[in-house]
Every structure is written in C-alpha cells, then in structure tokens.
Image 1: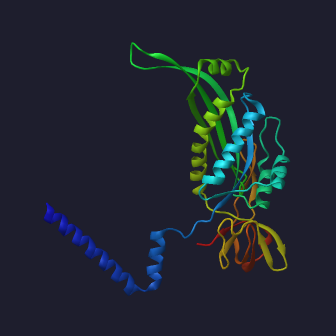
Image 2 (image 1 turned 120 degrees about the vertical axis):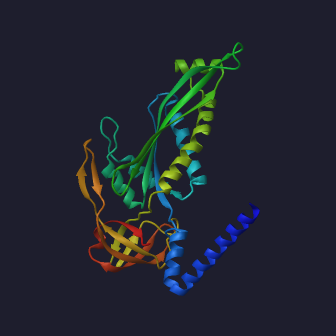
Image 3 (image 1 turned 45 degrees about the vertical axis):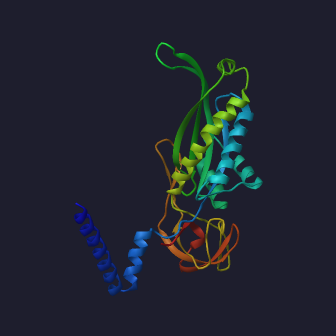
Length: 307
C-alpha cells in the first residue's frame, strides 16, 4: 500500500512537469491565459455602498432603537466590510432623504438609482426592525426543566441595485437573547424600552448581517459611472477608494431601457457595450479617463473593468 502511494505521487509529479513543459513550448500567451484562468478573472475592485438608514416598523424603542441599529451596522461595515466601501456624507444623506416614497413606504428605486450613480454606488442598503417579541422556552433535564425568558428580534435587509433599480436581495434575520422576567414583562407590554436588551440583540445580530452583506455584494461585479464630461475627459465617481489605477481599461455600456415589472415598479435593462475608455488620472474618490473607442459615451449606463 505504501509503495502504491509513492508510485501515485511520483506519477502526479511527472504529469505536472509534462504540463509545464507543454506550456513553455506553446508560448507565453498560452501560459498567461491558463495562469489567468487558474488564478481567476483578475483583481477585484471594491464596491461602493450607501446606507439609507433603519426603519423601525415594530414601534419598540422608537427612533432611539433605529438609530442604535444604524450606528452599529455602519460601524461594522466600515471596520469589517471586506470588499466594500461605505460612502457616508452629509450631502449624500440629504440626497437620499429627498428620494420620494409611496404612501405604503415603498421607495422610488429609479430616483434612488439616479442618486446612486452620481456618487458611484453599486448598491444602497436599507435596514428595518420588523418586530421584537417576548417568548418563553423550557430548558433543562426532563423533570427539572425551567422556564427561560427570551426576547426575539426580527430585522430585514434590502439591497437595491443602482444600475438596474431592482432589488438585489431581501432577507430577514432573527436572533434571540435570554432576559430577566422583569425585562421580559416590559418588552411584552411594550411600555418600557430595555436599552441593554436592545444592545445585546444588536451585538448578536449585526455581525451576521454584515457578513451576509459582504458575501452577497462581494459576488456582484464592480460597476462605475461617468458623472461628468469635459472636452475629451470623462470623470468617474470612483478612484483609489475602489482600487482603480492609471492605465486601467474600462468597458462602457449604454443606458438601460426602462420597463415596468409585474408589481408596477419601473426597472432598467442593462445596455450593450458601446465603447472603451482608459484611466489617465486617479484621485481618492474620482478618476479621469479618455476614450479609446465608441461614441456617445457620455450617455452610458455604467462602466466595468475590462477582463
């Protein structure tokens, strides 16, 4: 058995050497292509996201609870949001506050997408507190079981895609912590905001929400937007913050056509490729580029890093 393992290992080494020899014989282009396929599709640019805030639909804790949830999620995304850049400024917050909503609270996704493109966002996040409940659970060995008093928090995260004005994902999260009977009674009656309990629930839930956001948005391709045109120079609302570098080639895609969905919402269909631009200057959150090919590039829907 030991001899068979040695033979198999030597065989694997021999095949690897043969493969490398073939690659060297077939030329650098083939070697680069296969290396490119093995290593992946090149470097990944970071995605810019913004946060609409937290809506408290439960009524529990009012704006204090909603503000605490917003602060914790933003802090977590800034510190640990791998592959994401959280954009947060007074002007952006003001612009998003002015995006209209329907009487039911549904946001105008086309207006939101327009704001998002101006700031170079890939997605806009919205968090909502859906409910908080006092529940009980029997724990312990049979015959010695006791009642545990628990509080369960339900929160929803919605991510809006800026390019298409659609919902990228909509997910509910639930987490539970053990509380005292007095705290449980206050939550059941809804007559007292238990700040300590709320903070414990958020501390348990927010890291999971942040990991989910990072994973889901991390799988989305980076998309940028031309925010200004002057003579032959195109200005992008992204720069060193997402990882752009001088010499990068970006593919330019036409603006999407609006369509009405089954639910009555209006969405944008991604357009076809209409040209390419080359990055000539990179600043912290801006970049400049010149045209390589195509026409009417100022009417673009988005740009993507050429692979």
